Length: 170
Image 1 (cartoon, helix red, strand yellow):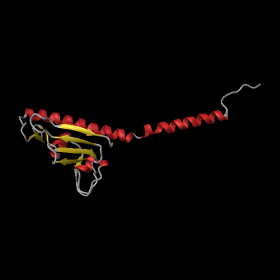
Image 2 (image 1 turned 90 degrees about the horizontal axis):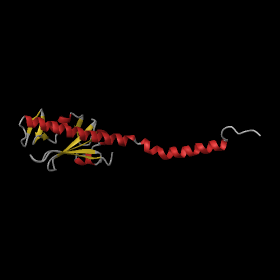
Image 3 (image 1 turned 90 degrees about the vertical axis):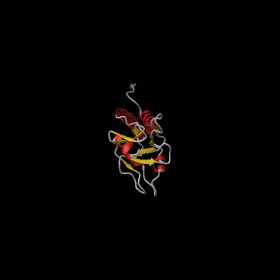
Image 4 (image 1 turned 30 degrees about the vertical axis):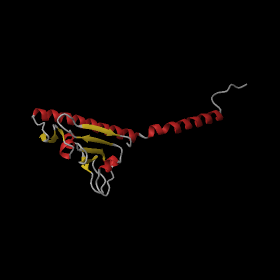
């Protein structure tokens, strides 16, 4: 009697089918890297804003410029923290960002909208590739992405600026 060497064709086919099923089941967990990357990018922007805010506050304190409005190191400030404007927090972080324009998609790395209707004023910042623009520029152009950073300038001398991330849509 001849001793069997290796696998039969049926065994080989069954193993291939089982491996195929496992691959199809596990693949979706590894394919969607863009969401993780975008979430990390938005969290990185939050860190950059927090760092720039602290550095600007320190510079404003050294220059004795902690009033309701001022300038520290070329950055517009409110109570020593960067203002929620392009000349404030965007300048402090040195980001490639553009304001949301009427009916235009963003072309820069980041898109922002200054929301003067909030107290204190806030700036919403989102990855530019997510912002498509609308007929009239609005905060919803950014907040509608559910993947953005909200920078709220200091409300008064005892309340620092805050940075919050919304990443449910990243």
